[in-house]
Image (cartoon, rainbow over all chains, first blue to last red; front, top):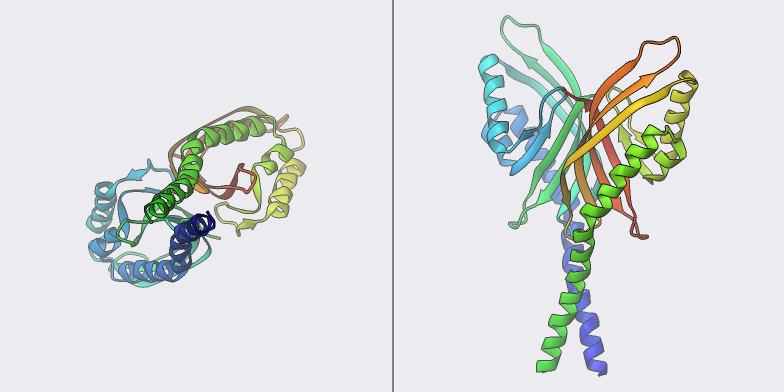
Length: 155
Length: 155
């Protein structure tokens, strides 16, 4: 009976330990996600940006209906490129804070500030600052991807 | 040996079942949270609104520094009341979608639209529409409270 009790404790321990391992790896993994987002945005690399999203993620931009699903996100990026074919990302900075991870290590959230300067021949330079609330999900493959994003004007 | 193996399976099952129970109860519990937020906002009941927040929750409003912690949230509500002492909430509607719950049932997120009409003697009626991304956390007492909120102008 004692060995069964110990077995239960060990089994429960193993169960919660796996969740804790996911949760404790998350800050490092999500820092990597953030850097990949910065790198992809600096390169204006739509494929790399879309790869950071889950297939049925949703982006919430001010004054627009939710962009739900990768097809809608791809269309938005294509529209921006079509409207600004010669735009160059002169600089893009992003820093995040407030990271919290669900106990099973499958969901996380953080909020980030970004500052972008976009140059385009014959157009005034765009110099904008935004803030995003990111909800991230850890897929079955162990990779964190963006699940929800809301964007707002930063101070 | 066989009984130990069965015991492990049962123990692991109990461990994950508890998480599943939390997660499966969440939609009903969060619908209740949403209704409490609607009721408190309609009454302009600051104490009831603040009770729906976690102590160290943070609200992200456009163009302002993050309001982190209940003291900062309380101050914002007090400032609004001081600036608009005779404001009345003529109507407030909110509807939410996209609810997702972390596997352990401790974190959830949803996005909501709100429409508020505020009347004040001698002032033009305020008729505004917003959208919020809510991140909720289930406390040790089993109660869901707001952990992060970002607000933006709705279409």
